[in-house]
Image (tube, rainbow, N blue to C red; front, side, top):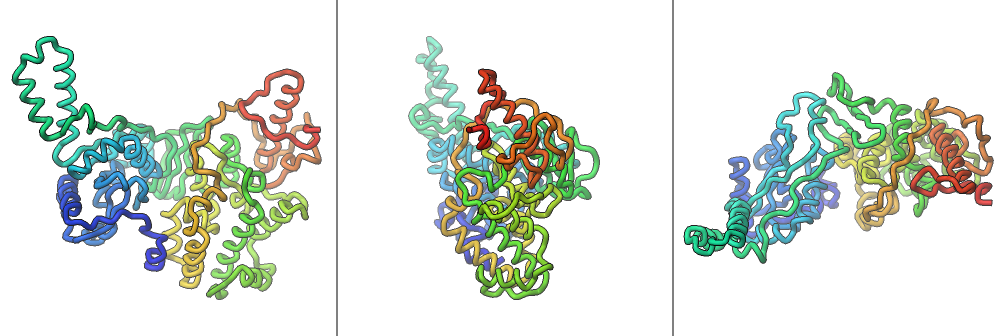
Length: 499
């Protein structure tokens, strides 16, 4: 992993802790939470205050998260909000911590000017003894205070001030006034510089967890589901209607479409689909070259094309599938018939703009791990695990590529691949989806496929696209006749409909 660390691809963007005063504050907080201390004169911390150097020193990378459920944290500065979260057990933990810091930044700025803030992401589950217990985690409360209890004192002072302002004879109460003065000497003027966080509770709806071999839980959707990465580690029934294994590709594809969570890359707005497809094909070539023992040292795109010619019939099916889709995208080939069981299927999708876009892209990265760029961006835990098992040549090629093509412009690369990072308005709820006959069902006989409407053909998105086009056609016909559109969005119509 040294190569990744040196290039900033691992432990990057951590916050340095170098001054003796900050180290002393950190040790006070660490002792308060865990009873441990560090002898290091300087180190780096993530958004939760975890330090990989201290983890190595203590021989415990989970010293702030011993049960893997209620993560503890140490805040030395609000600047930690931009740092990553290392050793994440839940996909929502970093987002909750960042929201807490951003929503309470003035209070945290005032608190960390005096002392370290220590706390915990608290939920009602303290021991995950079965996968079913994960469904009991719904609301996360951020419990935080300084080691000197400034928040508790400020809360008490605020109550006393409220009494002084509302009780008619309070100005004659010498005991009340003396207590207010004593607390104010410690907290300052809480009416002008508030120390009490305004929001400390956050919802955890849909999420991924590392527990039990990996689980994706989508419960806040029209069609809820759970997806097990390693069924052997998550045995037994789950308290949800639909539970799938990661290997059930057809079922996952059908479920993604029923919830309208994904879109074809070649139909996504504002992306250079051919460039994305070509890069995915390069990643697949690198994977195939390593499998066959071919050299990757200093390999350029031209060299990879040479490898493709050498492999010939040995090229994997996912390469051929993406090549066929690329020919169609560039206008020089027919619409390829690629079903959900085809290895290229999930390579050809990305998450639609919605609240769980990042979580869906994380799932797609796990379903198509040969795309190392998407894997690194969306699922670093799996990326590091797979990287450890690669050959030295492949490690070198991937690290150089990510340093050159991703680190130079992280925001631009994410926007080009997955869409803008700005929050997007959620569309109104769609009407209940029509029944599906399976991922390869034929278009309904009630409407003949329009030859100009390429999505109506049974291709990489099978009956899902056919059923969606049929519903959109009915909506368009209703809109022309003065009826309701049936949905909150204006789906693109075929050329024939536009005429």
